[in-house]
Amino acid sequence: MKKLSKYFVIRGLMISCVIALFFRDQPLGAQDNYQKDIVDIFTHGDTSVVSEPEIKKLYLPVLPIIGYAPANGFMLGAGVAGSILLDSARHTHISSALANLILTSKHQINLNVRHNIYLSHDTWIFQGDWRLLFFNQPTYGLGINDFPAAMSLNGLGIEDTDGAQPMTFNYLRMYETFFRRINKRFYAGIGWAVDYHFKLKDELLDLSAIPPFYTSHYLYNTARDFSTDHYSAIGLTGKILYDSRDNAINPYRGTYLDIGLRVNEKIFGSSKNSSRLLMEFRNYQLVGRGVNHFAFWLMGSIQLSGTDPYLALPSIGWDTYNRSGRGYLQGRFRGENVVYAESEFRFRIKSNGLLGGVIFINTITADNKFIDQKLFDRFAFGYGAGLRIKMNKETRTNICVDLGLGQNNSSGIYFGIQEAF
Image (cartoon, rainbow, N blue to C red; front, side, top):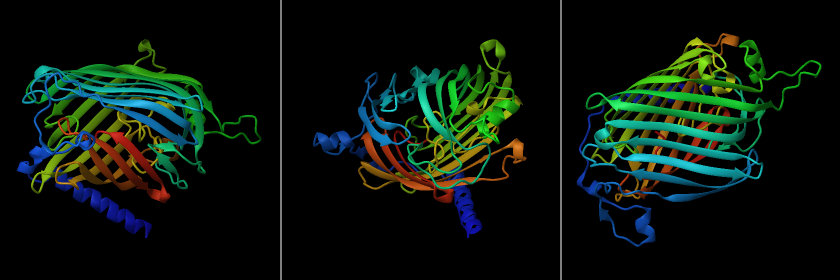
């Protein structure tokens, strides 16, 4: 039965990918011009004709963050999802930025700022992912492995499970890339990437026990000659970007392809020299009358030389907007080499666009050289559905609520602003 269900998941993913890549574009229906968003509900506004966002008008909704999870305690904070159009929408994509500050009763402070800025005529693009986390999170070793079920809220664990290896750590991330347009759709970019983990504590590690209890983090870093209490991966990035999306916040059609090389060097402050190939591909295709569409997402991170410290290795849930791997805890699967794919069908529930829905399936493969598990030897699958509420019709910004399910009865509830990808 397990093999049969995996077969249907693989088949569904492949069929969705083929449709997303090859389904012929359809024009937007006339009804797409008449939409309603959440502001219209509170102001009793009528469904209105949607025009392009006003140039240099700042759309800046502020949302409270209130919640509880045993791993974090009570959480209180605020988030903003700003967007602005810096020139005419006929030739310039809308810029966006997400920021949030979360404080918890367990003395955690999580500060996140991500931005995607398009200057006039898309001549320059600035992409950034900046974080300062005083954090705790379990890890589960490398590769694809089976552990009992876990429930998560936005990727953070709500209950402990066998196989989890809890850790506390501080983390500073500073990613920034500057892209320059070289023709209508292609860009060349250069930037920097900083991953600095410090004040690391393996809560289950016990070297004095007989026999000692080793964690995956300790064994990996010891084998690769990294410190076990702090380390860094710091380097430069070079990228080539192709972007034909009609909207950078919530695309209906188009393709996004980002291929890059990251080179970490000791002279920049990295613990070791290393290099890594990075790839991200997204494709969006309208179907039917043009109000529903398929979206496809593929990411890969391949080690070319050297080695990276344990928590700096690629893993689900640590992408720019923490949206990969719905159905699992953040960091549940990790490897020196990782490939991730997801397909999503996005559809309207209300003809005025106020309510929408999504169904999705995803899969990840990761290697573990310590047990000779190679990339593509094993896969972990997730699937689920979600609700979309139109927060702003001019910018196409949605409030997202998703339920994700994974293997071994793993599950999660995910809240967010803007689409998963």
